[in-house]
Length: 448
Image 1 (tube, one colour):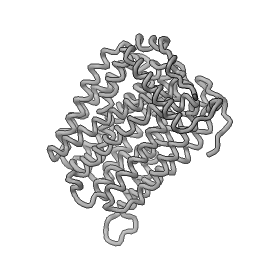
Image 2 (cartoon, rainbow, N blue to C red):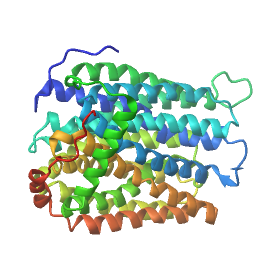
Image 3 (cartoon, rainbow, N blue to C red):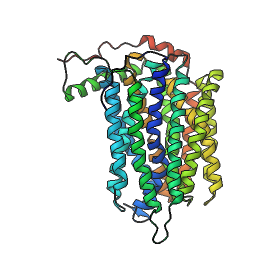
Image 4 (cartoon, rainbow, N blue to C red):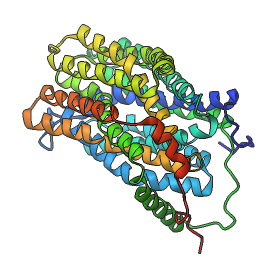
């Protein structure tokens, strides 16, 4: 995947924006399969018994996601600062995309019963996915202006939901054609493995198209630095930015609110499959169908909330989604075991609000940060997202303590309510005005 000779970023260029949005199309096949298939495949096939290391599959998978988030939290801002210093967002995006997608291709070849190996391979795949998204998100302030950034961000999520949904149709057809009867050639486990493998191929293939339309990296620094020096630069800039963040209270308040309410959405995405398979005793076919509903409805939901944001502003639109999310968590608690219809109804509602909360949170943040350090700040945005990994950790801990995911699902409602209360206090105009006061003097590290 050789470097192209695309020009530097031109804001609001349709060709560039479409190419940028198509990366969301590319990687969404994997993240959809992660939620719809990988978690349920782990609890239903890879797990040799109902419990491993004394934990249920549902609790173990949730804790893995939480611990992985903490690890990612430590790496992301440093990577973002490194990319800004080297003006190399596109190169970093390509490298981590390849890392993540190659480990996704390895995932289906892990044998049944190899729990630790499966969790390790899954974790590396997730690392590549999240790290690549730091640099993908970092392009947003470069290719859009304040008056278009909400629509551009929503377009990326909308194409992502559509692409992920189309791929999930393929995986669902495979699962529906499978059979666990004696002598069957295509078993459900084999169908799941094929679906996981194909998502890696989809990710690589469409990423090649997306990268061909993204603006080229800037010229390399006059003096080439070794890896240790780049890490030092990234770390020092990160520390300098953290210190300055404390003097911008409205941006900081938004960040805290986002960490809390995103803990709720992140938990829903990560544990829906295991919760449905382990607690609700639903079939993989039903779970995949639910995620298919989410993908296609989220396509329209992302676009719809982009329009709502134009009328109400992004902050108020996000608050609307958080009220709905709270109700969804309570409904999931009362959902009877084996209720496929109820689970599908919840999935349809999730689809409408998922696109809105993700797209508008990203674009709202993008209007509060300095464009000249967008990768670094979206590195922090990824940190904030990974701090939200506390949600799956709390879910896993409560599930392990009670022996059921039902009590754990109520913790999700608490995250939404607290996040909503804090977001209501954010002064968006003040946060946007504060961009002009950012200074990176003292944060630039020389090559000496």
